[in-house]
Image (tube, rainbow over all chains, first blue to last red; front, side, top):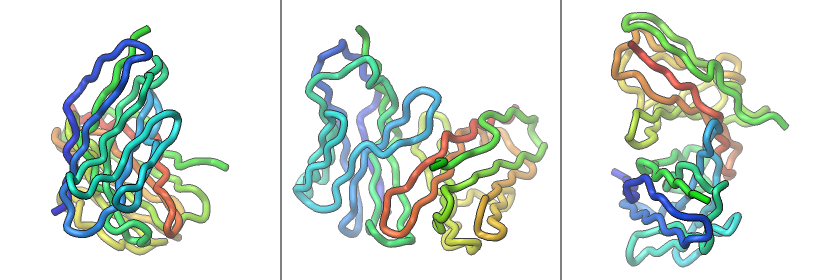
Length: 115
Length: 112
């Protein structure tokens, strides 16, 4: 079945450091890929998505590119802020757009950014 | 517009007791999902409603879990009797056709 693997955390960075959180997936079809974020005390929020190979999703300075050849969707940000401290979840949905599609998540990666 | 709302935010119950979680989706969203995250593990799909019908309940762990969505509005997830391994965060999400899923804040369930 479908699965998502993301790097173990916590990831601890200083403010303005470069961030990469690795995510790879296994899927039988052509999934859509997502990054969700959970800030402390809040629910899951969609951060960005990509629906086909070579698409780049971006939001709030975060980017991720759908790489079919490496089955990856790594999350990057050039300069993190303390307010980016949260848990980040990589997920896939196969197929996107169907009213019946469900999400398969990774384990989540906690990011801690210090001033 | 109100988001997805879940009640309660936290619940601590003893093993063997019953707990009912509630989810109010975004108004007009026919699709409603329940997910669960056990500590340190993946968020896992439990079930999916389309309006009041169960479209997919393949993720429900066992028959101690019962989900309902009477009238196609809010949904409840009852655990009876609760076991220690049921502890975790239960998320509800709703969506329209071909749009992203919007999640609630989750209910943190602790069974002691």
